[in-house]
Amino acid sequence: MSETHTTYLAHGTPDDLRRQRETEVDPFHTRPEDAVTPEEALRLERLVWSEAEFTRQVIAKAHEHHWKVHHCRPARTSRGWRTPIEGDRGFLDIVLARQGYLIFTELKSETGELTVDEELWMETLLNVALFCHRVSVVVWRPSDWDQIVDVLADPNPADYRRARGVAPHEPDAPRAEEAIRTERGEN
Image (cartoon, rainbow, N blue to C red; front, top):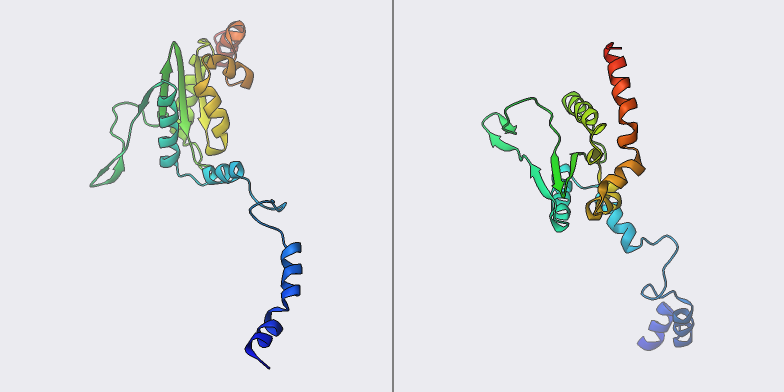
């Protein structure tokens, strides 16, 4: 047997190889049903962003849409990582301001949870947002990215807040104020 014939036995005859190529799926021209689209790959990548990476992405996107951004970065000290502040702990991660709109946002990874101090700040700020239709208080996660981009790009983000039910808009403010007074026992 010649080497050429041995090759045919190991890989098939030239006709066998031609038939095999004709029936193979070309991965560059067709998409198997279980393949991930580029958009889906980006969405999946965002789900594993750390809170620090997510914060960088939100700040970059906010600057892209001309928001003023405030974020206190922690610093490494001899006692570990600390965020130097004077006041109450737990203030939200980012404050965004643009053209009369104000957004207070706490950024969390997909599995991150609010601390008690963060919850207290959110409650306090939401009470303010009840009476100020251009103020929003939100928790954002990487899975909210498309929504975040929409809010930051929107020239009127208060409409988003109303549509999403983050806080009532002005006509509901008197009812909210009454509910707060009732809760405090002032009625």
